Length: 310
Length: 322
Image (cartoon, rainbow over all chains, first blue to last red; front, side):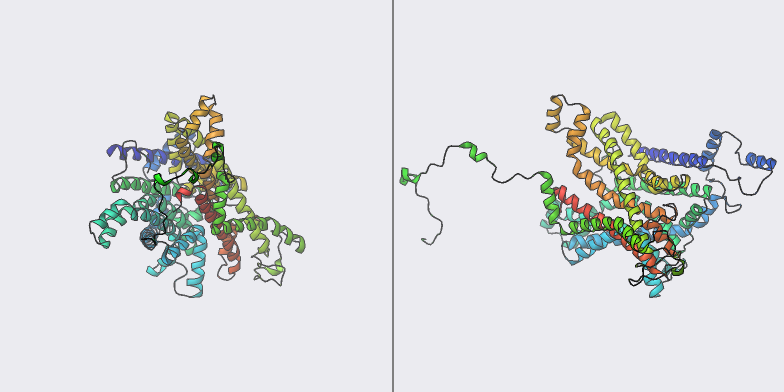
């Protein structure tokens, strides 16, 4: 077990290292630097600035300094927002994104599993068909289309919900709905197929044969085994929701990291782009790491010896 | 007891020579196949044809593809403008069939009908090109992994796992920030990690197939690795490969739309469905048609590809069907 975790952890670090290195060298590949601007700067000042920020040193030295900085949580300074540390920008905007993201993850899992369960229990009935239509639509329609549509219908036309902003519980409804449409669809499909499989398994027959009540069978056997594949999806889903939030925050005017990211890309604010990329990378790789570990704890059938991918 | 409809067999003692009939001695006749033999492909095609939903999806895809190339050209010929001609007297015109702008115009007076369909062209090109490149790299990489196994497999697999664990859209965004966005760089950025999934599918298939008797037979007749891989192993793995390609097209289309949304897609005046939706977002509450048509079209394309891919999977692998 310890070896498995250590192995996973090691590869997470390797991936992270590659991501950070890639961002650094890509940043270096862009012509110009933070101090080439339209305004003419005297050569002496330019030199002083280079010295101040270590840009006069050879690239490999800058690289190691950057690695060291990133490890210490220093992601550099913004080029567009004067005197703003990238890490400050991230920590200021993270709370809104975190709130939105965590609500979305919980909603996606609860609704997705419920929908999938109902579909499996009422296999080939009306509920099943409805659930599967919802699932197909959720996978096919891009999140930003859903977001715009919801905004138009529920906020602009019906005035039931606020159009923009992030001030209270009501403000969560539309962004969360848009953000979770695809994960819900995925989870519902996963749960449905695995529950159908479980429902036909021999141990369910055994449980029935020994006279266990339907509720007990459902809660103790079917659900516990049926939602197993959903756990593997939690990692990818986090990635989905995080990247999805980039667009959703923009549409609903939520001041989170995603909105900051879009602005940075629009303004080509490279340090911010790189910083947020690394931050997202750390977040997503951690989510995947935790998922891998959690899966082993939940499903004792997984073999640990070879560190096999689930 | 006489009402029993089953005829009672006479006991062997009652049988006389006349009760027996000669039915011929030609053993070959018993082996003759009465009906025309059906190849695996025709079998799959028949199963697919019975799947009405998948066939509808296929039809929709064909119609959309043809329209995407014919409609802008035809309408442009008739009314004499193209996707970037500005009709500045008619900006943000609502859709109407009585005017020349059937889907209305955008904020620069460009015709939405032509833009929507040329946008569909771009989306389809990006989706198909990315899927094809993924296919090429994935098949070669996965084929080598699966065929050689052992050390080679371990190293190559670890490499792809590490690459895969770096979030897909982040790498793509990063690349497009650095490279100038154009159709080519977008496709490149989409395929940089997109092929991994395909390589794993191919690897799994090859690993299952390579221990089968027909491979041994071919090997014992002196077939080399290349011949085994490309003539025997890959053709047998073609079913799952086709399904994966079909399902990776909508992913690429979505990713392109997503990138366009961040301003990293094709650059103006060229439009893709994603960039049109992004452009429409600012005035969306007042000019909903600017969003509606591209949104419907992109959803329809993705829906059709997904449904067709699912249908294809059921048809090619009946074991999987639930």
